[in-house]
Amino acid sequence: LSVDASSQSGRKIPDTLFGIFFEEINHAGAGGIWAELVSNRGFEAGGQNTPSDFSPWTIIGDETTISVGTDRSSPFKRNPVALRVQSNCDADACPSTGVGVYNPGYWGMNLENGKGYKLILHVKSLDSVNISVSLTNSDGSQTLATTNIVASASDVSDWTKVQFELFPTGSATGGRLQLTTRKKGVFWLDQVSLVPMDTYMGHGFRKDLLSMVADLKPRFLRFPGGCYVEGERLWNAFRWTASVGPWEERPGHFGDVWNYWSDDGLGYFEFLQLAEDLGAAPVWVINNGVSHQDSVNTANIASWVKDALDSIEFARGSADSTWGSVRASMGHPEPFTLKYMAIGNEDCGKNYYTGNYLKFYSAIKNAYPDMNIITNCNALGTTLDHPADYYDFHTYTTASSMFSQKNVFNSAKRSGPKAFVSEYAVWQSDAGKGSLLASLAEAAFLIGLENNSDIVEMASYAPLFVNDNDRRWNPDAIVFNSSHVYGTPSYWMQHYFRESGGAILNPATIQSNSSSLAASAITWKNSDNSEFLKIKIVNFGNDTVNLKISVSGLSNSINEVDSFTTVLTSSNVMDENSFSNPTKVVPVQTPLTNANSQMDAVIQPHSITS
Ligand code: AHR
Image 1 (tube, rainbow, N blue to C red):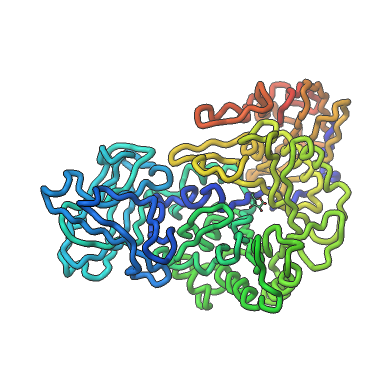
Image 2: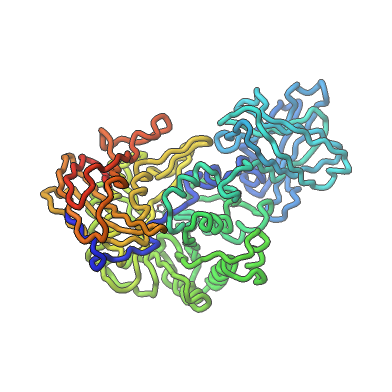
């Protein structure tokens, strides 16, 4: 392998090259990165007509002691459903545990000894109340933290907001929140929230999951989907206006592609905040009036276009603009830096897409000329019939096809819109729930993107997250449940590309008989001016490959002490990580003792080596 590291032969890789794509799929957000522990906190998940299903809330008590149902007495106009709890027993006539309801969260709440939890709820009653609020283990037999709401009738005759901080004295990964009473009477509950006090940057995200993301050093964050943006039907598509403002007032919606309810606590504002916290450029995917099964005629699209312009004003407008003031009221008076918008997701060719796209494109460019607009229409090997700054390219395929696709952009036109590979992954039998094989092919593909980064400016793996209790899509990069998390090999593969954005790509030529190799070389400087060279080699084949590596043109000599080799491999190419063995397939770093401009390297079968 010969690497030409001279400054004159290198080319800068776009700063944005590798980022992440977050979709509300697999409970990635609700019951995932968004740290809210209460599932169906507003009792709206069963729909706005009552009586409705209020699960996963569950009744404590039997038919003689308690009746629970929904009605439309909520103080919040956009989410009218509240829970009515009627205790039919008093004092000793009630079971010792009391009667009431509990919420098990999303497949159990992770309650940790000594950590703080903020509980907010809204309550109303025509009588005085004595409600016991507790955090318990999974069957309620062990109380980990408890407090009481004791109030006279006049205190709670109107809806009253109550807040507590709770500190469990024990831990449970499948815990629950219980609200019980031993007093006869009726009370109503609405918007019940329980959130750990320690969240990522204090902005409401689960710390363990976000630190995995931050470790990837993503340069952009594409959000909030995917198919989630489109909806199976338009009435179930993500609507940003319903996802901003006070959390209690958000109506929530049923995502009908991935089939679950989201209270939209993780809304448009929170995505912009997350991008800022990660130092990643937000890429806002907006619905352009096209879902999986219906679409708005271009003749009727004007209000959707206005809605898109409003979303930009929300992100970028001054704090005294109409929508900028809503953002400011949510705690972010300074504008967010929003420079990328995708018009739809996988909608090219669907009814009205091009007509609608053109309306969005011209209105956005007219008002915000610096906005980069991404079309769903693939321009690889063809010329678009509409203007765009970027075109979306999605690929889900077999391992061998992904490996071959490392060359797919070699013959692409060098002019026109740039490519945004916004979703890629090996899937189905080659991937299982995340195999080493899949990660090898993907690494080769990304090497191909680095080599073509004069026209490919952005790329992200998909999907990013899966809650193991709701696997709507396999494989995914990061797997979690209420308390544990691990990366699949495809997650760890992305670590090899963390320094690529903004680095210099140096020509790397493979001299080998093996057709199973892919390689690239980059150089970059850290803030202290120290210079680094990273060579990545993927061996997709079954055989060990002996390579002579020769590096020319470096301005400094190679420092052995600071040189490392990092290898991702395993004994079986179909090996996966799991909760019981989360580090079976992870990169292993060792000192590179023979670091020099001329090196002999032994590249293991089925490996990624740097
Ligand atoms: O990543 C999962 C899905 O795959 C996305 O929602 C969609 O864009 C693609 O079809």
